[in-house]
Amino acid sequence: MEIREESRENWGTRAGFILAAVGSAVGLGNLWGFPYKLYSFGGGAFLIPYVFALIAIGIPMMILEFSLGHITQRAAPDAFGRLNRKFEVVGWWAIILSFVIMTYYPVILAYCFSFLWYSLKGAFLKQALPWAGAGIEGVKNANDFFYNQFLGYHQDLTLGALQPSLILPLALTWLAAYLCTFKGTKHVGRVVLLTVPLPWIMLLILTVRGMTLPGSAHGLAFYLNPDWSELAEPTTWRYAFGQVFFSLSLAFGVMITYASFLHRKSDLNNNAAIVGLADLATSFIAGLAVFSTLGAMSFASQQAGNPIPVTEVVAGGPGLTFVAFPYALAQLPAAPWFSILFFVTLVTLGIDSAFSISESVLAAIVDKTGWKRSIVLPSIMLIGFLIGLVFITQGGLNWLGIIDGFINGTWGIAFIGCLECLILGWLYRIDRLRLHAND
Ligand code: PHE
Image 1: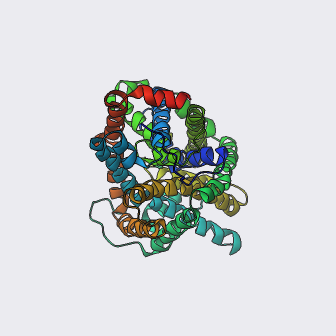
Image 2: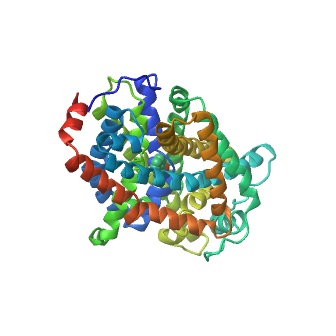
Image 3: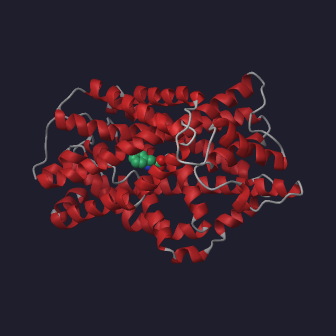
């Protein structure tokens, strides 16, 4: 296949690209997904299938996606289409997955914006944090606040009423994503100079704080003392592979698209390794922060004469990050300030992933149709916002769980991941891509 020499937007610098790729990979999945999956599938034991999946398939697939995007200089559908017309559909399936994530990922960010707002009110108006409370009270409050007051959550699948207080945060999320991306790739390369390092620093502070809370060792023991029997469960392995794909933003067209904006002379292999390892490190540290905090929560309940084991401190699920962390933050001196920093962290952590997803959808449409970026971008974002409203209804969290399960399930990333491997590895000549990558 010929290498196209047409002028295409590019990242400006190598760091711009690496940071943008890391920014896409490192996201809410590291903090909201990883500890929660780890927690449900055997604690520390989950690290084994996870690291295995990362090395066996995560990093190699990323090299593959980088090479494909780089060699074709096209977003996913066209990139596959250039190999063979028939493969284009695979690229579109990846874009559909991106689109699905694009509707619910910002909803989690909207939660973060709201919690940030409460923290700001706490700091500047001296109002108590609504989830605050000491000991067992705090544990109860944090749960009650998130599920009952904040989400107005009900357990069945009917949607119920829209939570009006979440509409504005959702709109804000989309606006922020728009502002970061509308000027194009070079600008994104600069935005990530801030949105990548900032959450890391904050995460470290939180880990240290979590580990110095009384009782944290208890939670860490759960993290590091694994339940080995989970390793015998195929589901554990499937989730580990799914999480690797999700966390590295693979099989969504994102990395193909991002690499398509790379300079002709770029180091693909090392970049892929850097992104993969940075993502793993972030997930692991997020796990430390979450589990030390869970330990402290459990300890607090014990002190109050009402012991709750680590496994039951919070209901598993997406709520983990919005119950365990808010609780821990409320225990800190100058709690509202810490909360502000923490939720700014989450927002900066997630926003670069959110816009990478829209970028993948956007670039696919623009490459295909030649329509103007300035029109397509706001249009898809508006559609994403409108569909996102479904998830901020009373039953929305259940739907979010189901859709997330679909993405991580058989017909989601696993399917596309396998197809990509089959096509690039067998049907197309992998040696070309290998030569290209090694070049
Ligand atoms: N990798 C991101 C995270 O871990 C999520 C994501 C998935 C981003 C797919 C882009 C595409 O949160």
